[in-house]
Image 1 (cartoon, one colour):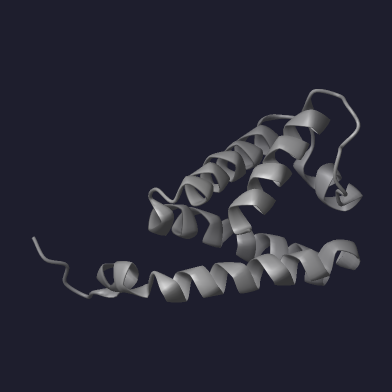
Image 2 (cartoon, one colour):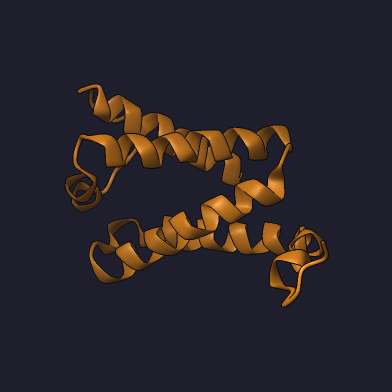
Length: 117
C-alpha cells in the first residue's frame, strides 16, 4: 500500500508539474511551498522510485530509509501548516513504521557505533 501511495503521489506531482489538473487530492499549501521547479520534480521523482521499489519488493530497506525523511516532513507539514490531508500523513507514517519494524534486522547496522570493516 505504501508503494502505491507514493507512486500515485509522485505521478500526481508530475501531472501538476506538466500543467495539468491533479488526478488525486493535493495540498494547495504544499504545492505552493514546492513550487513548480526542481524541488517538486526531485521530491516526486524520489517518491516514484521508492514507490516502485516497494511495489516490486526490491531494495525495500533502502526505499524505507529514503522515504523516512520525506514522511517526517510530510507529517510535520500537515500537523503545523495544512491539516487538510493529516489523516493520509498519519496513515503513511503508520505504514512506514510497520514496514520498518518488519525489516528491522536490516537496520541494525545503521545504529552500530563502530561498523564492521
